[in-house]
Image 1 (cartoon, rainbow, N blue to C red):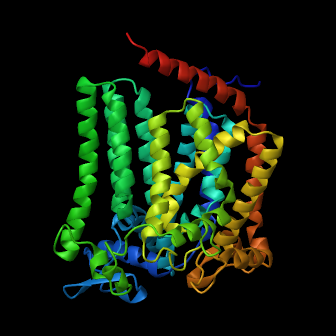
Image 2 (image 1 turned 180 degrees about the vertical axis):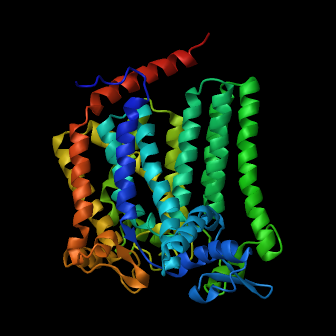
Image 3 (image 1 turned 90 degrees about the horizontal axis):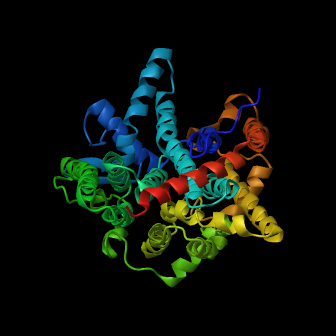
Length: 494
């Protein structure tokens, strides 16, 4: 017997497609282990030091990384502590499992699970959150799903979600905070408002604990939440505002306590004691000065890390902003979203080493990618057939570049001036990345070269089939209409 669609206004209608997006992205990330490197080792050394030595000093492991700080006779990670702290549960679980099963390569297994249950999990969840957010902005389910998949697979975020770097986790935390703040527009009741505000403070705060440059976007989202809360006024505003400040304060305390333990002062950053890249100490604030035009142009169009060469469909983002504005989407949310995307572009162009070292793509601006991808959805929704066809080609190209980067060139030497031109041919000939102990699940299963990607391709094919067969489009539209009507009744003057 065929089941009936969920009742109008039911969240059940949104769960299946959101879970499908989460599932396909999580599997796509879990398929790869990218091995070790300076950046990853610096963060994971701190995780190991906390687990094994119960200290924040990485003296025992510092030999494996150049991304480190030296202070008062000890070595420390020069990174913000959020990634290392977030990885403590999966690293501990991996250690216990390794000992239980008698595994030899314990560190690699620990690092794999740490990436999987921090970066990979967070980005897959963030993409599902973007999908539901766009539905609430009156974007059709197909367009919302496309934007979520562009973010997860069609940008260099695919690579960053498989690396133990801070960009993916910080990006996801900002998305969670933004979605919770946007939800405050029509939250019902004191308890729900306080819970959402607490999520805003915790998520935005943890983004800063993970990457210090997230402080300004975190403040922007916090102000956005307070503006929406102000409309309710009175006790609701005070209680929810207190919840936001409390959770954000916990995150701030985490940073200050770590810096006090590591560097002797709560206001001292690890970047002030770096062993390498000391040239950043002579330029502005730890290498950050002001945006430079040549860097801006290179970050958008340059062969080394030009965003629009890696994800050309983002050319549609300014048009999408205008379409959402004219369609009546929440304007405070629109401005904050566009502001975060623009902030990260300007921040990246202001940094001394704006090329981002050996990374595939412009990773310093990557936490702004989900907020730019939001604006692709309305262009797809209102585009005619020819424009949709052109956008589809750009999306497929972006996913191909992301796949090539994840499989063959997740880390690429700084001497390479055109990474895409190396990554795509490498993927075509089955030259896969295996440095630092890297692998994919197909290789572990005994497949070789390009054939090692066949299981992942099969998963994608099944996911596409399920999506096309699922009776979700009509149910989602009905549910979204009902929820918008309910929100209008809630916000109507009494």
